[in-house]
Image (cartoon, rainbow, N blue to C red; front, top):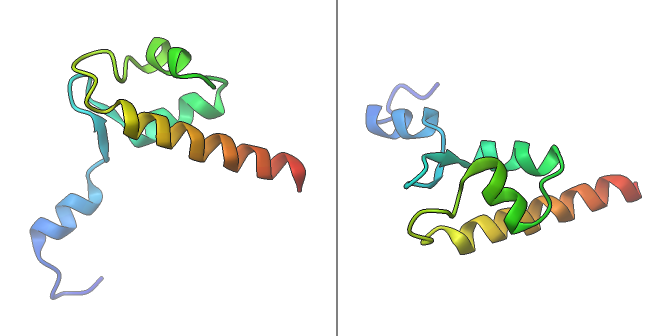
Length: 78
């Protein structure tokens, strides 16, 4: 570890990345749900409750879903 790292920076690296602040859903939770079979926005909403509050995170949730579906597709091909 770099001893000159700011403790605030270190703390933010260790904290899970929250995507949905209303429901406190992390990116890791979204990825796990997708890998477990939630492959539509509706399924993501049902399984994680992400994007069911104010909706501000909807686009970010959608982009994570698309990225992970693409990653899963690549794994199946290779």
